[in-house]
Amino acid sequence: MASMKLGEGLGARLNFFAPSPDGEWRILSVNPVTGPSLPSTDLTHFSRTTVTPPTTAESSWILRGVTSNTRYVTNEERDALNAASEGLGRPQATRAACIPIRKMAAWWALSQQERRDIFETQSHHTANSMPYLPAIARQLHHCRDLGDTDFDFVTWFEYAPEDADAFEELVAKLRASPEWKYVDREVDIRLERV
Image (cartoon, rainbow, N blue to C red):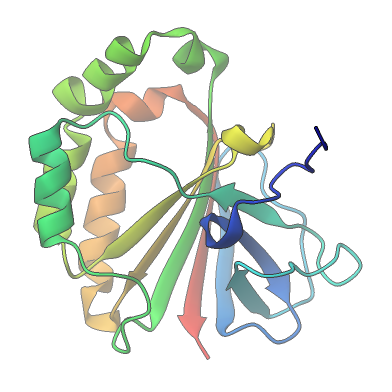
């Protein structure tokens, strides 16, 4: 049996995020929230792509993640999220946030049921997010599944400029939740469509 390279065969599920010379997004800010930031860059544009990523010669850092099944939700919660959500790439959604995070080893030492309890029963992650849909579109990308040790997830959000305050409210609620006590690295990258 032939061996596969990491990420091979994932197709459009594998996404790359990086500063680039000609990306469709302009970098507005890169701010560390918890732990170290990403290396600084002179590039002012940003790309999110499912095709060949920029090389490290072009970009000082590259994030990658794979979309996967929805985790830590019941069938009813998943159905409600899907019904209230709209996809990425809407013309009015000219703002974006790329937020990579890493959780502590203590999070991963918990059972899936214990993580579910913190995620939803204590933090109300899904319930607190519902009022912001469909104005804020989001997609979670798993980095840990690809063997990444810098980040466990990259969350990509898109929204219209008039929904910027709502996005700040959402992010503040999530960061104030019990779940976020397990985050030991988070970087907040804000973007504007070119």
